[in-house]
Structure formats: structure tokens, C-alpha cells
Image (cartoon, rainbow, N blue to C red; front, side, top):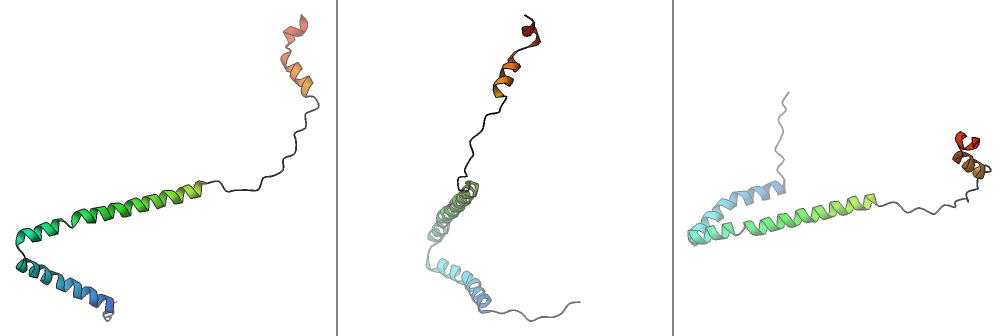
Length: 108
């Protein structure tokens, strides 16, 4: 069931409401003090810095992500282990020569 609650009016919400409420008034004030051409030029000049800032943030995030992935893929350094020398098999020489002989070679 619906329970009526009070509005969470915090100082942050009050400040946001004040800024959003005064923006149209300041916009209209700017139009009354300046001609329309200046207003339109200034409004359009906002976009290139905004695009550059967005690109810089995206490139920075991409570099950080790549660096993080490369750091994860690095093999972890381990202590070298002592390897025992390989002992030769007892029948190593005999098995190599017998593998080369075939039944046809043994007859002749």
C-alpha cells in the first residue's frame, strides 16, 4: 500500500533548484544586453571545448584500462627452482640402434 512520505529537501537539492531556476532568467538577460549574433556565437563556441574535454576523458580512460589489462597479463615473478640433472636411460643406446634396424635389414 502507498505510504505518504515527506520530500527529502536537502541543501544540495535546494542549490540545484536555484541554479536550474535562474538559468533561463540569466539567458534572457544576456539576450537583452547583447545582440543575437554574439549570443549565438558564444553558444556555438561552447561545443569544441566540450568535445575536446570528452575526448581527453575517453582517451585517459582507455589508456588506464589498457595499462590495467597489461599489468594483469604480466607473468608473476617466481623464485627459480632447482632442477635436477636428467639421468640417461640405461637402454638408451640399445633402443636407438634397434629402432633403426628393420626385419628386412636383419636378413641381409
